[in-house]
Image (cartoon, rainbow, N blue to C red; front, side, top):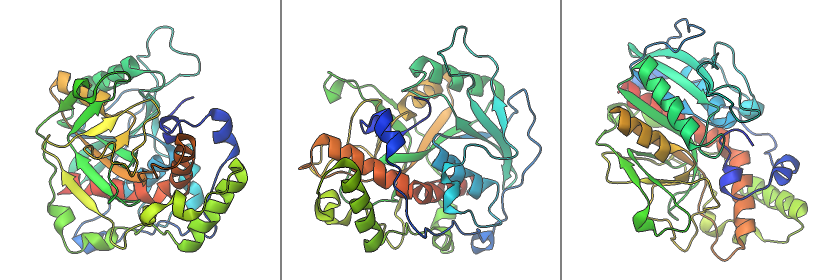
Length: 360
C-alpha cells in the first residue's frame, strides 16, 4: 500500500481501510488566513520549474493527503477557505511531479518520488515536497535515496518533515503540535536502549509563534460531544462492537484544546519514535518518553545527518494515546477513525507552525 498512512502504523488491514471511512457532518472549512495578525503577508508563489528540483534554502516534506491539503492551504492558497472535503484531494495545481532518477527495477506501482512546489516566505525560498516515498513502502533505502537527491539538487540548509502522528503522552490532546530535532528508529525484537537515535542541534526559531497574534491564526480542533458520539456509533456499527465513548476516549483525549498546544522541543534532547509496525502509545505510558509516534522521520534524520544537513520534525497529534485496557485491534481502529475525522484540522496547525518557524 502506498503513501504515509497511520492505518498501517495502527495495524489496520487494507480491506478495513477501504470499508470504514468515518467523517464529520457539517464539518467547518479551514478559514482564510489573516496574515496581518502577525504583521506578515501570504507566501509568494514563484514559478516552479518542471523536470529538475530547484535550489532552495529549506525543504518542507509532508506525507498523507490530509497533510498535503493543509500544506496547500497554509503555503499556497490561504486567501480563501478550504472545504473539509478537500482533505482527501490527491492533486493540486502548481505542483510538479518528481519522477526521475528512480532506481532500476523499482517495486510495482511505485513510479515517482513525490510532488514539489516553490514558495517564498519572508524573502526566503522554500521547496514544499509531498512525498510518495516512505519507510513502509517502498522502503527505507528508497526514502534515504530520496533525501540524498533532495540534498544534492536543492542544497538546502534545513529539511523539515511535517505531518500527523500518534500520541505518546496522556496530556497531549488531539491537535497538539510538537517540534523536535531527533528521531529514534523502532526495532522489533530489540530493547529500546538498542534502538538507533538520529539527532542534531538545530533549534527552531520561535519568534513568530511567540507573537500575541499567532494564536489567532490557529484553528481549534472542532471536536464536539455530538461528533464524538456519532463517530463512536459509526465505529461500533462498522466493527460490530459496543464500546461506550468513555472507553474509546478516556479523559477526553480526543477533545481538542481551546488554544492548540504547540511545543518547541528542538535542540536534540527530545526524540520522536519512528516505526513501520504496530506501535501505539497508550494510557499505560508505554511510550511517554517520546514526543510522538510516526512512520518516516528517523530515516529522514539519518540521511540528513549523513549529508551534514540540519533537520527538524514538526508533528501534530492526529490520534492521541489509546486506552490501554482496550484490545490492540480496537486501539488501532479508533485511532484511525479520529485521524480520518480530524487529520485535516490537526495538520493545518502543524503546517502553520512550520511556516512560522521558517518565517521567524
